[in-house]
Length: 440
Image (cartoon, rainbow, N blue to C red; front, side):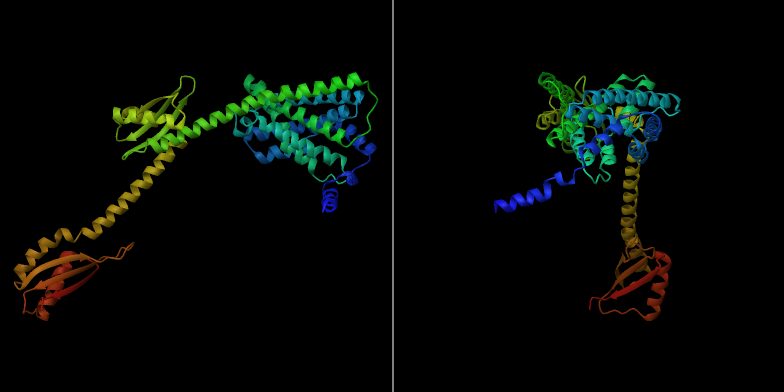
């Protein structure tokens, strides 16, 4: 059994048999480091393309720009150079990395300074708040990248890594931050780019060491120092993202709890919460409601429930009456139209129900009047009841007239004909059915 497991693991998980020669791998990585001529112009055009994609919020354009970007070259080169102790290759890789980074940011800055559209779209905003998840993405993406580089069948892994780790969009967003004079955008985007750089380098280094590539001679003290520096850089890079992730998680939890609190605790008959605003600085939760106004006791009861949702640190400010109407008018067009659409749908439903109710009760209102008139025209009639028998969802109206006559009496055919004509004129239904009941 043990031999079978070992055979299975070797057969499916060992990658030694798929490796390129070390010489071919080194040549390929060294070639991808340089940013001169063709590579440099491809980078510039890719940056313009990615900036356009961010500007018009087009995911497809951004992905296309990442596919043609050569930015992965020097990043992989730095990790590879440290892994084989090649100081000359490392210096070349870090120099070209710096050149590529500076040119990318300048190109993006130029684009956004010239672009007439300066609004930050969702694709651009997504690159301003890196988290620990980006550390994992860069780590696993870099691991896939180095395995692809050292294998014979590279497939489309490298373009996939470029897309997953998203090197281009953060640089474009950093350029946007400079063009708009927004240091927060620049810092957040560049930090995301640096996370990707560090952890792609680290996984490349780990992959090279794990595969036991031939290393150049280097004094032990320098080799140990370089490893310590790398670990320190990784830790210093990852720590801020952990705090950002915690803050993001806390914020999401708070917003989820507040939505649940509003949904469950402000659900009063005839009252609807239309919007809410969270003032995190002053710890105030503002909730605008329409419909029946809440009393002070009801609001106090709702406030007591806030502890249940872990939001007791916030002061509840209920906005209702005229103030809520004013607030609703200041809401964005999309939100207002959403509520207007809901109210219109409810109004149509209520109208349809009223129409159906009126349809079924319209003859009941005139039954007494018709009954008194028929007793004068036909003395042997004791009671008259008019019922609606119209089909649902139909414009055709059908009435049933139940005529109760005195016992032992009969209504001649001429009187029945006269009765039908009179009722037809009086009721004005599309069809009329008469039932004669003499209680015999």
